[in-house]
Length: 138
Image (cartoon, rainbow, N blue to C red; front, side, top):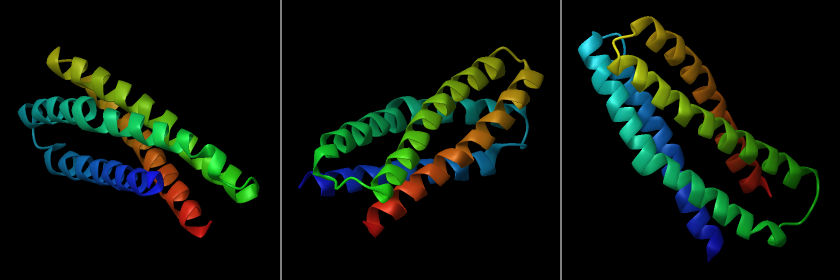
């Protein structure tokens, strides 16, 4: 039963990441007023949806560790999951820093952090997809 709850949470986490990518694409570069809205919206989603999902995915995954057969596939899946979780935590921090820059009117700082956030956001998605793919292959 726990595996199904875990998979549901992982799906919700992936969906959240994809939705965030969509509103990033829709609002970024549309003017500073839209970028301020974007920064606030993304922080709100990270704080209220993405971070809780990430914590629940990590907790349910950890609860199932003893049920998984050890081996190379298992270790690869754990590595992908760890990359996704740790990188996402870093991205959540970057989203907050970007918001702080936007609210201060520091658009050069906003753009620097925004670029880094998008680079690491891609790593989050790759880690998630790798962990899911390896989990389904097991």
